[in-house]
Length: 79
Image 1 (spheres, rainbow, N blue to C red):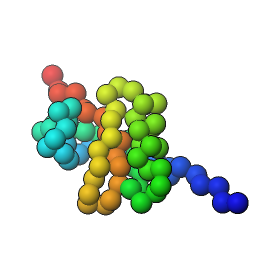
Image 2: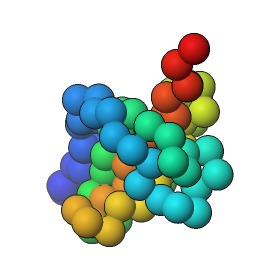
Image 3: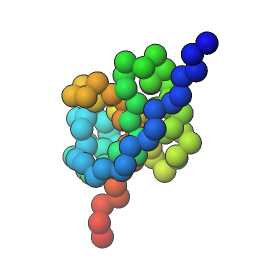
């Protein structure tokens, strides 16, 4: 029997919004708090669960360059 572990979250990275379709991030900085390989059978589900557990506007982006599901949190505007 093989036991699969969820991929470990990545170190947070500040980046510009990667998806023009995302109304929460478009044109603003977001912080990637975790990433799961799209090739993992349950990668999308694991990413959704991580976003829900984090709260604070966390949601999932599919990132074609890297073939992964990234859990991101929009960075509030300074000021």
